[in-house]
Length: 277
Image (cartoon, rainbow, N blue to C red; front, side, top):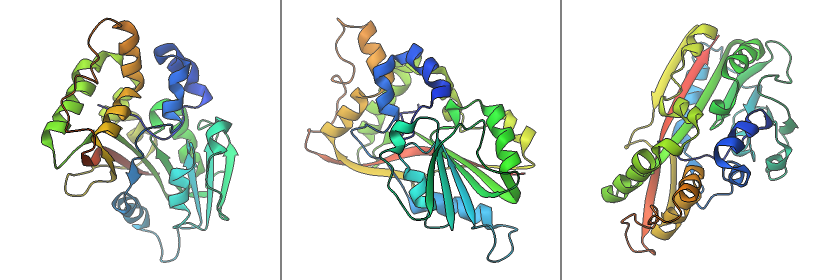
């Protein structure tokens, strides 16, 4: 089950999210989380390998677009590989926290109306945000904006695993997939499906799906057991569950985890879809 992300919910999906969870829970999606999952180089190696295939040497690294950038985490990583990066989000608040770089331009804009000319972008990246878009409209816009041979890369991660403590992984999955199963925003099904959406084949001629592995994780972090528990408490579906079960034993407190100070090596199940026009 999906367990949050660092990219903000934009205005086009804010109303639906407020209806489902309540307005105060939006800050979770804006990056105000107990844990800070980090994208590993292996993820971007996968993206860049796909992107470079069929590109003439020295081409394809001019202009990248990060859509649903939130606080600019993905944009900052793209800036090391592309001469110019534009990072957009339809909510201006998280953009205020973005790290400035000489080759990144931050702009308020919607995914369904990309502020770029036709066939001008080498690579479009969407990290933890595709499920919040009007997907057909965005894919149509992405196809319009990409250069011939350009790449659309969409990726997301789900609930954390703990390779050193299988029992921790089991506890987290029971919480996410059983106890809280009916409290997730319905659009999260796109993440659970690994972004395997029929619209991808409709708009793009080449589509490749890749999933992370335990041996080669794409998203990682290290935290104490207490911090992991606090991360779960911040999940919007937990907050919704709590409101509806005020007199039931707290499901996060009931998780059987190692002692609070125990350090845990965490990784997240991640999915990537790569597309070319």
